[in-house]
Length: 140
Image (cartoon, rainbow, N blue to C red; front, side, top):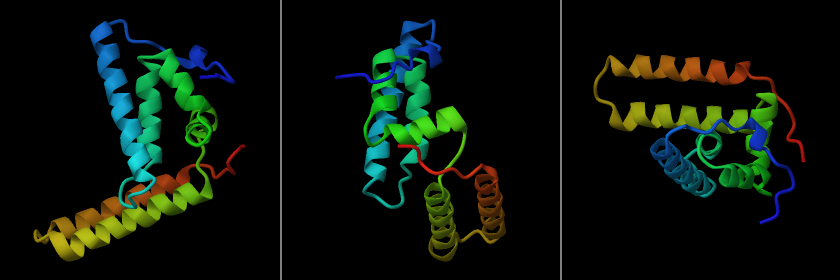
């Protein structure tokens, strides 16, 4: 594995070896879920990759650098870590999937009437929150 940039300076390892091991396991699980999200439309990729980066930054320099330098996954993570911005595509997908999920849930699954407007309001609030982030083109 060739590391093009060393991001170790951004890390803050847990003092506890147990917590480092748990963080590493959680980060690895998040990478797997993020990869599944590339193929499954209802499973989001970016949030899992961001959580994996956080967990790896607390547990393993090797895996944090691997994720940050990954040819396909790294640009999404680096963009958030370095700029705290989202691409227009990411915003569109996040709000679109949020809308589809809430509408589908409300129409087909939720039978508790007071939950319907609460879910809709939550979706609107999350959508507004997502739109608040600066939009930036992906750096290559």
